[in-house]
Length: 465
Image (cartoon, rainbow, N blue to C red; front, top):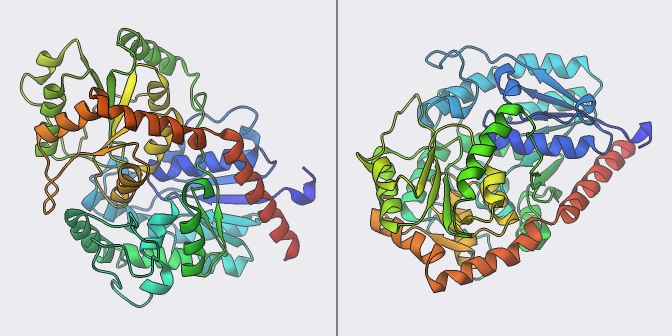
């Protein structure tokens, strides 16, 4: 790439690894185009990043900004996985807002072309404008999620759409799957408009981040939701740029001796299982089941009699316990893994016949890369939208039935969902549809072409200014 086409780009994700990792993946993709990336986060978060390959590391500079101290926030807490979801995340947002001054000083110290930032950064666009830095708001969510709360419809309102059990009135598509179950709607309306200890609601953060950007980039593709990408552009009156799905590679972050030792133990267990028989169970690093949910899930796994590999990481903030005798009763057909696990490699193995997931977008992308059907238990925020799309529209799995009002579920509903997808003849449909969708999700060339177009746009926009 010619020097005139090489850009200096800042990446500034929210303090959650469900955000940080997609931002890192985008960083690596842009670095392959010759751009220099300044990846900004807190010191401990940067230390926990997957290893960057030797050929890209010279083009990705890690920039540590110490997190300001906030009362009641644990000393070493720098990501949502370090704290409880409710109170802890609220305190992290307050601390994150305290990064305004050090972030401003860093931006002033460099010659920068673009800054790519996350939903919490409502205060960043005015700073970038003063410094002449162009701005991209990068949503790790797909266009359907952003279409729920478009800036123009929500501006000056605490909630222009409160009937979340039906598609919002500005979505014109018949039979839209953009709706929430009653228990999800109650939680969303409470959390999105709640004023945090920082004095700012999540709706205000999102509105400010979107309104202040020059370009809205989305982790999605036209092959999946072309009509919603166009709708989002119309609703927010911004240029909307799909970046593809940023599917991770099996080689990403691997190679360390301890990780290879871990993989040997896991794959040794998987090799003993029948092809397509195992359900992989994982709920990401950001969200937790409560004790009642954990108990019903465990007993549902036991009732199903399906082999399972469960990544069960106990949290220091809310220690949970498996049902008494569960591990002994399921020993031999179940593996309970209590530390870091190479999720992508586990999902790629032929023993895996389904993925019991919380429906985080990254997890869905990883599963469908390999055509694995889904057993879905959405836990928070936008998870329900992904679950509706994948179960109702794409038919690559099922949602575990739940009580509409409180979101509870039973061991029987867990067992029946697992049996349907993994064991029943009817489950073949989900497997077939997941294999069909994997053609899109696993198409590296397709998703790289979106990055090519994005890189060209950033370069040409720079030249035009």
